[in-house]
Image 1 (cartoon, rainbow, N blue to C red):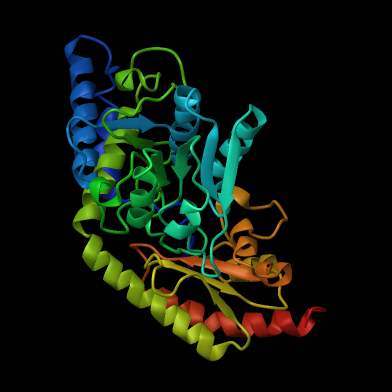
Image 2 (cartoon, rainbow, N blue to C red):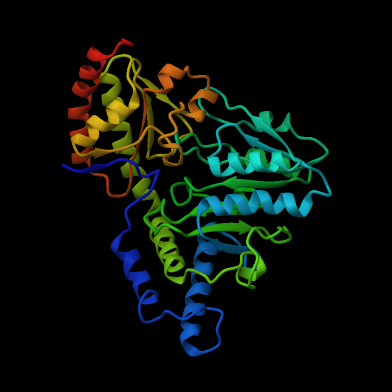
Length: 384
């Protein structure tokens, strides 16, 4: 049996999305910036897709849906764009210790060119509180960037509460919503954000397409210079096929969100309960009350996660120990370390991330094969 449980890393392209993309890879291949009728087809698809994403996000027609090449580019565009445009007002930025590296490494770059960054520490469940953010605010703070839901442990941050604190001081607020988009019900106004990043390939759309939502009145220094595409905010010929795929994936995911979340949460909870029942000395990481319905992060002390991953792969099960962008680094998860978990326990952590295509038969299969694998590896481990 083949079981895929790494949906927080990427998802399978579904047939409806591929069907929506194909015309723009074949007969409707015109450049959306040109004037002839073939180009008009692309331009129409571009603007219809923009409206679809705006509707899913609850954005108004005056606000900008800017298509990018990835969620990472959207994060970079938000942070570097604000830094470049508002540096005369201050050079202080606030983020958290558990952000995706698209945010963390961008912040490191900004520090190298003269900005000061405060990194808020989460609580033991991976949650960033509004109070913790409030304590870091200064007169020269120009931007706060806190992720909506963590990609490794699934903890959902109280973005609406944080935004109230931030906006009361007249500071811009960005959230990386790559993992929460179409997994949680929200609108940009209910979150209170000025900037929001998302990505197609986390919701059964294509890789290589993202979005930065930009609230009306927010100015950004461009990250990419060139033509006047995307309202002059992001140069480069638009990936119409990818954009159509993103729009279709978002349309489907938003329409089926409630039913899908209930099904996936049921399977996730069954997996969690059974692991706790059948395997001794395990730890579930994350916030039990505020967590993505598809995500389960479990630490297996006395084991290296790589051994578990390889053994499970031999049995047809694909999953990871954390963020795909950090895979192979050899370092323990920065998220788990920041949560106060010791390095040895961190190294034995697995992330199970379920998706729309996950079945109960697959979960039952994992439940059957995982306990003996853990027992065998522990029996040979010098750590046990």
